[in-house]
Structures are given as C-alpha cells and as structure tokens.
Length: 285
Image 1 (tube, rainbow, N blue to C red):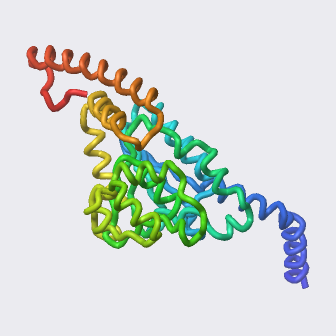
Image 2: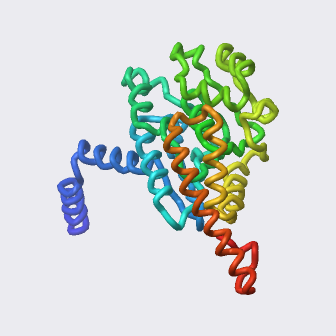
C-alpha cells in the first residue's frame, strides 16, 4: 500500500510540474527555429548549414535573413576567410516548399526582401551542392563563388511547373555562367540539369563523388584561405566588376580598391622581409 501511495504521489507531482502543451510546443518551435541555420568554424573556414531536413531544407524568410546575418558576421570576422554554404542531411535545398507557399502566398517576395540575394559577399563563398538545388536554391547556389557539386546532384529552376516567374537576379547570374542560349533552354523548359551537364556548361565548378561534397568543399575553402587574402579579394572583386552577377558595382569597385592597395603594401613588406631572410615567400599573408 505504501508503494502504491508513493507511486500515486509521484504521478500527481509529475502532472502538476509538467508544462502546458501550448508552452511545450512553443518551446520546441522556437528551439527548432533557432537551429534552422547552423554555423561551425573550422579554422579560417565558416561552414554555414541550412538545417530544415524534414522540409527538404526549403527556404523561409527567417532562414534567408539568418544566412545573411551569418555571412555578414563572417565578413567582419578577422579570423575567417572563406565560407561554405551547404544543406544538412544530403540535400542543398528544394527552394520554397509548397506547404509554405500555401500558408504564406507572399513568401517568395519576403525571402527576396531580406536582401540576401542582393548582397555582394566580401569574402568567397563555396556552395557544397548535394541532392537538389531547385528554384530559389538554384539562385542561391549561383550566388556563391564556387559550386562543389556531387555527381548525383540536380539543379533546376522549375519555374515553369510552379508558375512563378524567375527573378532577374537568377537570370543574370545564370547568363553570366552559361550564356543566354543555354539559359533559355534551362529556364524555359524547366528541366532538371545534372551535374555533368552543369560542369560542361560552366554552372558548376567541380564534380565530386556522392557523399563527399561538404568535405571536398571545405578542403577547397581551406586552399583558398591559405592564399594571400588581400590580392585574392582584389582579383575577385575585379572579375565581378566585369560581369552581371552582382549589381553593386560601386561596392565592388570600393572592395577592389581597398584590397588592391592593401595587397601592394603587403607585397612590398613581403619583399623587404624576404631579403632580410626572416620569412619565406609562401608565408606572405
């Protein structure tokens, strides 16, 4: 009888102390919302992950705003040089989920209004593309400097199926990568583009084996981070000033001027130090 009474007492205490369901769901929702974008630093490389695998890593205004926030933090972090953008659990992103579009008919405009796709990142970003990069996620991959893509990955606009017109940023970036003729084929037909075709067309930087995309992208990012950064960023800005990938021409020109002057000063310092025998050429930063 004593054991039964103690069990009943413990059960009543558990019910009394258990939070209301509404509060519990609110806690779970806020926690999952906070982790929809993950950030991990591996030395000078920032790995930024889209973490919404139960919804195929589809984008939302919150995720787009958080990605922009993390990239701005990367830009201002003196200890980080390159970013890697990827999707958790084997899928880069399906763009916009139909359920999200049904719930919020303005989600497309709200994602664009975050300013992520308008931004010129001041440091290189490598996209680790696995699974699918569809719709706005296709644009997000093209927004990055490089696309390290697994051999089973698929890129597509799929605008024809959804009825949503492609935004002008995607069109400009795609044309700058593959030319207007192939861009017409991909966008108007809406057909999926496999990794091999994407590489041949110039939309993909390199193809890697399935399951190795993130690791290979991180290795590539480390190789970029080991280069003298001022000259790398100056040349990068100069290249983008000649293309239509980004519309922020004044910002790009300012970035080129700043890093160009800094690189020249570092080269002079490097030559002086090298002549004195203090450091080697490969250690210039």
